[in-house]
Image (cartoon, rainbow, N blue to C red; front, side, top):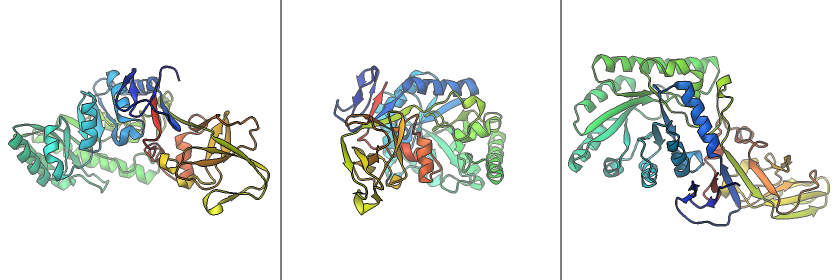
Length: 395
């Protein structure tokens, strides 16, 4: 493991972030050097004019928000971090992160006092929320940075384009708010189907029209962004020229290009997950395995138990379809996925013994492939499911 250490909250450059050394049943090993290479590849692609916002929401997509943010900040190639809520932002600030942080999602009105006190950019998608935030900021004697989110076709949150100009005008008149940016989000930029590509280009056109209106009125915010990872890769020229000056690559920086181009080849996954065999049994043909008797051996079989389960992020949908790698060879998961254990058939790997390392995510068993087995479009489904019981190790 080199200089990495297994910690409850993670470790960066030998410094304990929180928690203490502890025994573990599974580890997620994070390669910070590969993270730096991924970031450098994107920086080289966009140059210095385009800012990079690195989403570290959902505990940095399961990689550990504090360790990832500290490593990324040290590269000097990240301009912003993106989080989902005020609690995630406060966690980064308490860990010493200095870079600007944007809360990408809408916040609860009940959290307005915390939003004002914390050094963050707050997403605004309604006039009512803007007024409430401005009022609280004035009461506290502070000025809050905000970014307007526009719904150009996601249908989830954000001000509708027809109302966005009026909202931006109103915010410009609120002395306790500073509008630092405006952004939108793609609905299907990862798709290469012609109809989806047409929809994505329509989203860009709608947002461009709004930016032009704001520019004409002299209230164009300093930051303008619409591109997530796949949006950047597939529509690079559209989202890094003209009014645009920031991108938001998330899963790309973690090592999983949803859309691939020759320049993305150096980008590799930064996470591997491993556990160890704790028991091994030789069962006769006809033996049932696991809850619900969902698997029956067809031959004399060597079955091992690995101490991870759905409480660690191993989806119960992998029952009888998932695989692991042991000694570089694949072995099938058999029977139901339990809360704390999985069972694997290693009959065809005769050298296996108790204590051997098991690759759950890695070069032989990628998160992308696991996602496909589950019928999921996004690798994040696998990574963000990893629980706190899987100890993050930073090397």
